Length: 147
Image 1 (spheres, rainbow, N blue to C red):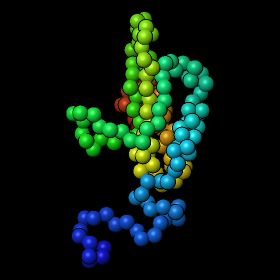
Image 2 (cartoon, rainbow, N blue to C red; image 1 turned 90 degrees about the horizontal axis):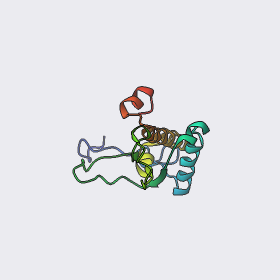
Image 3 (cartoon, one colour; image 1 turned 90 degrees about the vertical axis):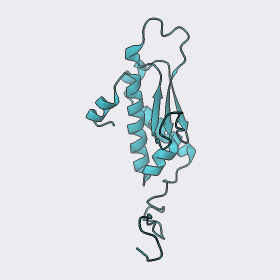
Image 4 (cartoon, rainbow, N blue to C red; image 1 turned 30 degrees about the vertical axis):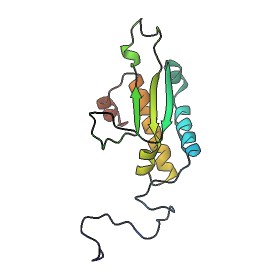
């Protein structure tokens, strides 16, 4: 480490790596390309499973904003908001808003170093959030390797 830098500061190389970007910088991907990666992940859901999804909408946002009472440093790649299929009763359909799955672009790009990384992380995140729609817990998803 150069003597001019105080200890503990991250070292960022002066030149990009072979991928054309700094390893600690977000992977550069346009909103359109990211949306295509989300759509590709949705297309990979087996049709039999996709047919059973009920009243759910998928959104893409830049970043998650922690809610009051949450740790302000909370980082999420995706979020499921709604009533899982396993918890819906006969009254649920009467005027219920759609469940909402949000995929957060910036945190995913922050942890990826290549287009392939982005596609993989988007796929894992989409599957993870859709699993919540089906009532599968975070604990079970981690056991299955979709954490």
